[in-house]
Amino acid sequence: MKTRNLEILVGAFVVLAILAMVLLSLKMSNLASYGDEGDVYEVTAQFENIGGLKVRSPVSAGGVRVGKVANISYNNQAFTAQVTLQLEDKYQFPLDTSASILTAGLLGEQYVGLVPGADEENLQQGDEIELTQSALVLEQVIGQFLYSKAQEE
Amino acid sequence: MLDWLQGIGHRVFSSISRMGRATLFLWQCLLALTYIPQKPMLLVRQLYSVGVQTLLIILVAGTFVGMVLALQAYIVLVDFGAEESISLMVSLSILRELGPVFTGLLFAGRAGSALTAEIGLMKSTEQLSGMEMMAVNPMKYVIAPRFLAGLISVPLLTAIFMAIAILGGFFVATEMLGQYEGVFWSQMQAKVDFYDDLINGMIKSLVFGFVVVWIAVFEGYDCVPTSEGLGQATTRTVVHGSLAVLGLDFILTALMFNV
Image (spheres, rainbow over the protein chains, first blue to last red):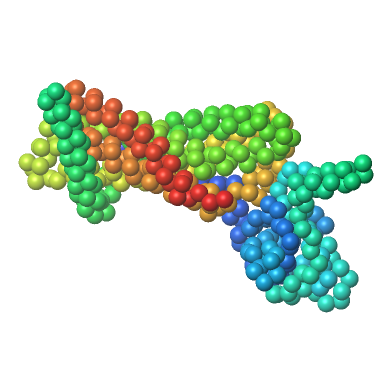
């Protein structure tokens, strides 16, 4: 085969592969969302039980995604789970905002839902959300239900 | 009885010496790679026969793998009312496992066997010794370009396989199963992680490409220079190459595994 044709075919192969790579990274994975998290601030919240919450789980307010879970650790002084939430700078919340761990659908993934309060001041970097509500653990709910049923009789 | 024991010992020693020869061969081959920048056309020619000619089988296989996965995922997920997760199941299985593994296996079968047969025939017809007579190092001129071409081609082919398989799944999910396009893409973008899923898959493909092309080129170079020996070497390339891909896949997955 002529050298020129060979070069064209190999070049086309490489270009195709690069296109595939671009398609994979931008359209088929979350690379696009890595860039636009530029301005963020972090707040912490203590939960008694976080259920199945994971790092990178979404944080939403009123159904709109406003940030993500940045870190989860166990607080050895208070004996609670400490969750660091990374919120986008363009969304501001009052100081007495409450955070609860909710489930999308009956068996879906868990996320942190924020309900804004009425305070005049807003949450800043490093603040803590005081009002929290733990995850609903299905086994506990069923246990409580059976217990209360047994008491009635 | 003694013959039998002797036979076992012979087999053990010959396979250990093969491993030794393969390692020395790899070292010589890596040293010879420095010659390629002086003669880039050697590499381009091999990229054509190793990469471009494998492209068609990768495209066809990828499309069908993606389409089948989407259908199978639908059957399982529809029971849980989670059929919007088809795209997630398709893309995660393709990116993490099937893309690199399928490409490795297909590459061993299509390009690896051809490499072994080509180099083996050069050896049986004494072209390699002829080159040495003319003070041309066959390592530099024959082996190194083929090795590098395989090393470059496999990750590129894997990327193409992944993309076309997900597009195949997209076609089935939207056209046959009536899913909305936006649901398909948004589920995928929300859950597929660039580093954990895509980059790990590409690392796998690099390792598979290295191992398969090493086996293929070595088997050709080391074959018994008869028509029978050539046939056996080609078979060994496909068998050992495929087994190496599957075995390494487990090790790599275990290394990268984190919940």
